[in-house]
Image (cartoon, rainbow, N blue to C red; front, side):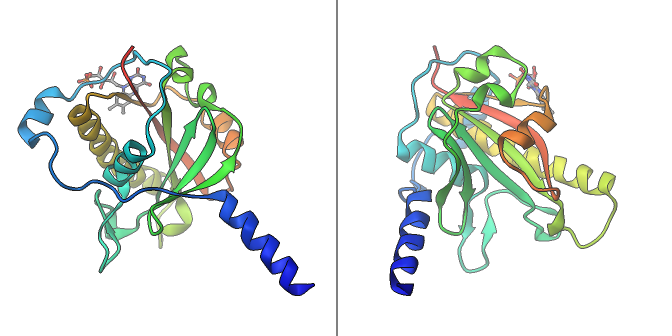
Length: 204
Ligand SMILES: Cc1cc2nc3c(=O)[nH]c(=O)nc-3n(C[C@H](O)[C@H](O)[C@H](O)COP(=O)(O)O)c2cc1C
């Protein structure tokens, strides 16, 4: 009986974890050319990203680039690594797990339109939501944490801009959002604070 309970619990867990392919870390557009192409865009076709593109995008955003230390593609104050990257797509909401380089299913609902006050959010293949886990900070008041977390989001957002510019994808970093609405859609806890969003997708 115990074995059956264990088996069904681990099957359920496996269903909720989607392993991403290894990110492609070689090649790509040269940095100076990529910087020349970086821009914001608000035009999106409904087309979804391949698993490989999703893998590359999330690794570029805030993946682990030094496995020996667990450090990431974006810096953080005191290496606090407070930013959690939520991924909203037509299929549902996922949390990016950098250690496993996998996605954990949060909800099977399409909440893309809830991630912003602009119409294009429902057309973008992906709307990333940057959430700061304030419990990762040792001290400081809420305002200090919010300031630091904003800087962290800026670095992650720029990583995403550069990945998109190198791949011919459109993207825009967004502050015009309803944070409470997003927190509800993502089932966030009290320590998790919505900071910014970023749309990513193919051009029209
Ligand atoms: C902190 C921040 C918040 C932003 N919020 C929004 C937003 O809510 N909606 C939007 O369409 N663009 C938003 N943008 C994108 C800017 O409008 C855009 O970066 C600016 O117009 C310059 O264009 P560029 O990125 O193509 O250089 C934001 C950018 C930053 C850095």
